[in-house]
Length: 100
Image (cartoon, rainbow, N blue to C red):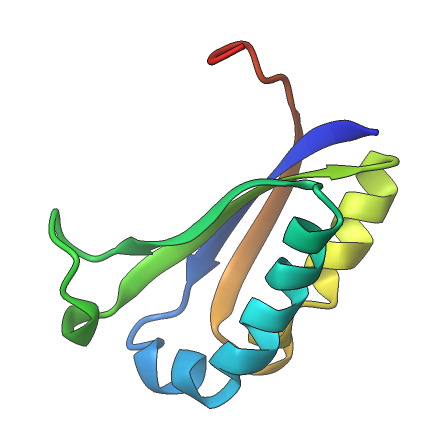
């Protein structure tokens, strides 16, 4: 298994959409974490602070998958995709160098 980074870019004013399916979204990430495949995951706040009331510009997930196709399929099945949270999702191979 190799790491893949999933960059997701939100639509404008995505916070209400996020809140509708957040639990389902987090459950999928918790599965990756339980399988020890998750390196990091989290949203990108609109500003340089953690004020969730201002919303988010997107999310980043770095996790292990068997292939780019598997990572893309996992990203495509995200509840945020179905709920219309994301305007665009980019999946790329990722090479972890540091920390070792």
